[in-house]
Length: 451
Image 1: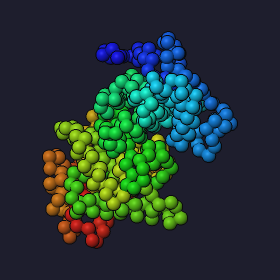
Image 2 (image 1 turned 90 degrees about the vertical axis):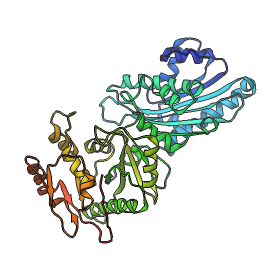
Image 3 (image 1 turned 120 degrees about the vertical axis):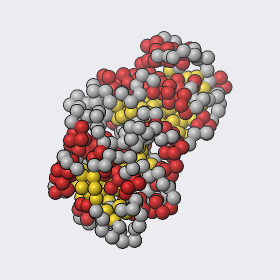
Image 4 (image 1 turned 180 degrees about the horizontal axis):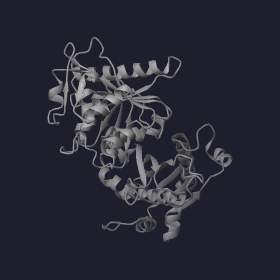
């Protein structure tokens, strides 16, 4: 058994090498052979490494793993996994199978190129047996690399790969122990893990939605995606080059009436952007946006169970949901603009809009001005959804009394909000320049669309 103390990468690799019950292959494309290198470097590699390969050339890769998929994709990773696993068992199962837990580690990565113009991300996977001759289990990760140089990204992939193999064999007691081991020395600052998929007996008690939510809740991902109908995909595929309408909010009420109101609000935003783009353009993608952060600095972070309850409610009826680690709209803008240059529109209820202007933004040198500049930096606008006048006081309870409003037929629109100086000048400017666009409430809708 491995030592109980916290282990560094060197010790993890050596521990695996000295455990003669497991044996496997390594296939790495795009970031050197940094995972296999650790096992070859620390000594005793003959106890772990059956084969190490790096098919960098596209023709060689196609010959080994087939054509028809992008080279950094889940499809290519799956082809690599199946090929390497089948070959490993064909060659060694007869002689070593009764005593050996086999594994195949694979990755396909786009590390930073010389000019720094590419997206630094990749797919990492592991197939393994818990017991000799047992049914295999499999886990796939999509990762974003945050180091500024190619050599540092290679180093981080090496650490992540060792962590993954070690965690699969020794740290699968709970999802928390597994991901704590997986993220050791590379979490958030160096590598972001924004998608996980898994299958097999080792993960029989895991739930996919819970695990994806945990990635954000634990700070391993900036955002994850939940599709209303399709299988989950990482944000880079979900958002790639799409025009977007984002409906951020707390969405604490999950009864059918409120769910319908939220759905109508998002549909209004999608219809408005589609009109802007013209009928010939592809339909915009509409997504609800939740955050794993506290609603205000005085609040506690939401519990996992509460997040899952709200996600499930919003997904009902094929609603798409993005779960963000941070709550500020400008952070949401920064995330989606990694993957699209198409128009992005937020559609927000008045209570959330008021909170945007009330927030102190002490973490930014330019406070509110800097927050708004970041928010609207790249083709971003806010659609302001009206709200029932009777509901507005309750929704903004506890905020400073720095505004007034009027109403028409019991409804308050964005034009009817009046902030006190000096914010009133800034608010008027955003309305006049159409960075802030009031939209109408559908005739059949009643109630509030708040934070």
